[in-house]
Amino acid sequence: MKTKLQNENMPTYLGVYNSLYSDIIEGIYPPNEHLPGETALSEKYGVSRNTLRQALAILCEDGMIIKSQGKGTIVAPKNSKASVEQTTTPLLSMSKLPVNSTVLSYNYGAPTDIARDKLSLSASDIVLACYCIFKSDDTVLGYSFTQVPAAFFDELSLDTSREESIKELILETLFKFTKTLDMTMKLIYANEIEMKFLNVPLQTPLLLIEAIHHNKMKLPIARNKFYFLPEYYHINFLLNN
Image 1 (cartoon, helix red, strand yellow):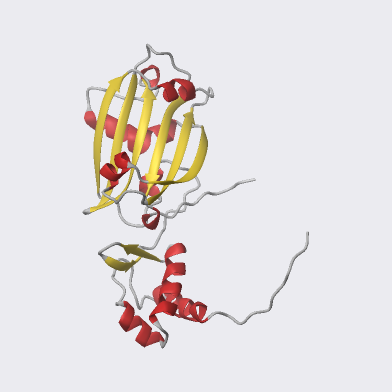
Image 2 (tube, one colour):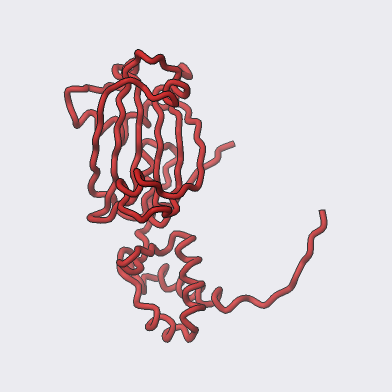
């Protein structure tokens, strides 16, 4: 394989990036606080607004700041969640903003064709299907769609007479009982269903992770689809060899 090497000067925006990064780390711009506007920042660091935007774009990619349409740019909260084990839904544990409310809707019924295929079910089986929206104050961060076969309700300690038990299952219990996960990740663009849940325009880029949960007997006990608005999440996977 041929490789072409080019020696180039460091782009101007990287110098601004380094200065902003240092100021954020040193607390000049505290977590959860808004950054000054582009005009003020470009004047402070002595660069054009275009150069500043390039630096801000990289800071956003690196999870240092969060840009929200119509709400300005804030410094991301410090992330102290570095647990090896995933014991809650990633829509909670990997959020850059504090999740302080959830909205659940659920029903019981026959499995969809794809659920029958991925969870090894028959048409006569009963499945819990649950949507859960995750919010930080008035900001929607993402949502999940979960399917759990009734055959595993007892194993998962689900009390169907208590809505709080369903909430616990979706947010935590399912992950504590999961021994292995088969996951696929893809970039998608919001359709009409996702627009409704996330309150975003059509074709907004989203990160979708689909996960099949298996118990210690290697049986599929649930299917999850996690829809992330990328600007609000830092997806972190740890590999232990």
